[in-house]
Amino acid sequence: MSDQPPKEASPNAVPAQRAFIDSVPHNHALGMEVLTMEAGGALFRLPYREDLIGNPDTGVLHGGVITTLLDACSGAAVFAALPRLMPVATLDLRVDYLRPAEPGRAVLAHATCYKLTRNVAFTRAVAYHDDRDDPIASSVGTFMLSTRRGAPKPEADS
Amino acid sequence: MSGSRDVRGPAAPMLERIAAAKRDRQLGALVDAIPYARFLGLSAELVGEEVITTMPYRDRLIGNPMLPALHGGTLGALVESAAIFELLFRAETALLPKTITLTIDYLRSAAPRDTFARGSVTRHGRRIANVRVEAWQADRAAPVVTAHAVFLVMREEARRDPAAPER
Image (cartoon, rainbow over all chains, first blue to last red; front, side, top):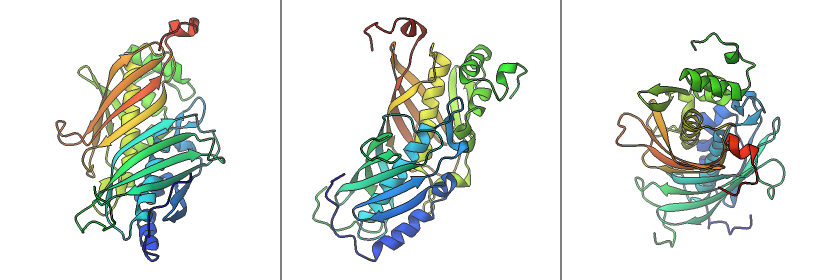
């Protein structure tokens, strides 16, 4: 992914935002690991687990697991792109399931926030085993930035 | 779940479970056979003529501890599951439907409470099925999520005649 990273998250902001992501109960329940989380994007890893299987005949992970991984990783990319920690909420998420995840293998997800406006963040993400160009699933999403504590103030206009 | 047939045993393949669920108008054993559905605590039952899928509240479903709110991904998993259960129960689907795309609109934040979902098949072709889903909590008229999904399905006649050019 060669998307231009969103501008200047303050250098001290990402640790607080990462701590927030690390505190999400459902991410823990799934066994999600945050590998990197920086202004240019987020990289998550989800180890294979038998209790996450969707088809017991094949051992393939449930699509919902992939959806959750992509949603969480996309949200982390938004957090990392923001100048400070603020609430964000997924507005919509579209997931294309390109091929089944291979049983027994961990799934990686990489997300970028490719556009940040005053109210809305736009993301792209892929889930894959070891080759980002041979994805299991890809997604696009939009996230609402909360205005309760004041919106960020980039040059954006929406 | 209630049931005495061998096909409901832990080793029964999914297709047999699907057939049994339709025959008995009971989705419980089918849902329980899916490990991730158990992980989420999902259940599905026929209420009147509707297949209603329920995701009971559990602390580990939380995605935003500040609000708090359910994780958007769990809602995605719920609506995808509800769409699949609807297809399995209604249609002559001979295989587990394969999700091609899922598009989720998050309408309001989902409170830490039980969530329900129902799918409706908008079109069922020979290879492709389109399903819309709504998920709600206390008030069905105020859904927390709407979604639509496109599935690859194969009916029996399509499997026998794969050359038939229809979607």
